[in-house]
Image (cartoon, rainbow, N blue to C red; front, side, top):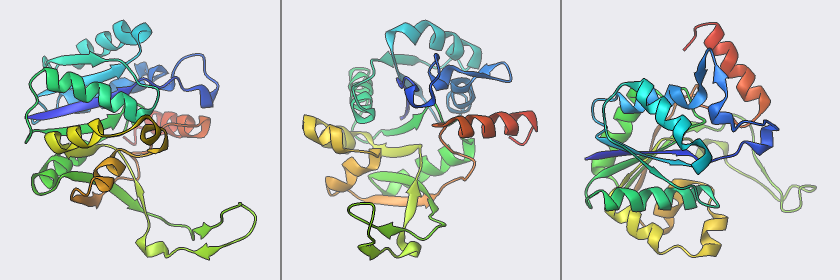
Length: 233
């Protein structure tokens, strides 16, 4: 089976909004609705688990109903970190019968421009790997500095990539790797695939999508609003 995990537990405090960013309406649709429609209506997704705070569960349920997919959707509590939220969702998936060879797709609710094609490519690539990470090339020269004042070394730009979501994983091996994490590990992890890499699993890269950006700043939100207004999505 193919399982989707959607992370929607963030509070959006960095943007200074009273409403979490994923629930802000753009063109009369909450931001989360855009990726929900794409994921839940993808023909190969069997069911979803959404990590969401208790105060917003009813709101998200309404969004799920509007997607009109009819697929099962379950809910999990957010963790103290992004990876903590993933672990909570993985546990729910396991309770619902997720098998070792099933594939789990993990996406951020604040990435509204996810395409069906990218979902398909993640699932396909994960048939021959333990983990799949969509990436886009780093365009700027990157400098290494330990103190932020003096350059310590230059990094080879052609070997550097920006990771995106969704990321796809073999459920069993990913679940086991996450169960071995300590509380200190959870504070250090910044990307889902990092867990698989550190566990020695086979992690492959596939081309990402520059439009598939995460809304983290007011500028990101403005760009998304412009794209919707101009009907460029």
